[in-house]
Image (tube, rainbow, N blue to C red; front, side, top):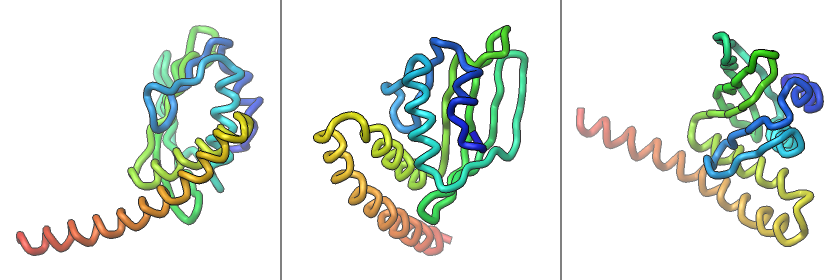
Length: 154
C-alpha cells in the first residue's frame, strides 16, 4: 500500500476477499475486482500514506497507519484477517480523528464514482466540497467552544 501498488496488494488477497469501507458499515466491497476499486480510491484520496507499526497473530495482521491529504493528518489501523495460505480474506479500515475521516470518506467517494456514470459523479462532486468545508469550520468552532466551556467549569 505504501508503494501505491494496488495490484501487488490485491495479489495477496483471496478471490472472495471482503473489504469494509471507512464510513459506512453497510457498504462493503466483495471480491478482488471491487477490492481493487476500493483500495485504489482510498490510496488516491491520500497525498501520502505510511504504515508506522504492526501487530501479528496467527490469523490477524493489524497495521497502524498515518495518511496525509489536503493539509490534514489522519491516523488509523488496517485490520487484515489472514487464512492458512497467508492470503487476506477480510480487510477493514478504522481511522481517526472524525473530521479527517469524514473528509477522506468524501475523497474516496469522489474517486469511486468516477467510473459510475455522469449523474452519480456529478452529484458526489457537488455534495462533497461543501460538506468538507462545513466539517473544517465546525471542527474549529467545536474545539473553541468546548475548550472555553471547560475553562469556565474549572
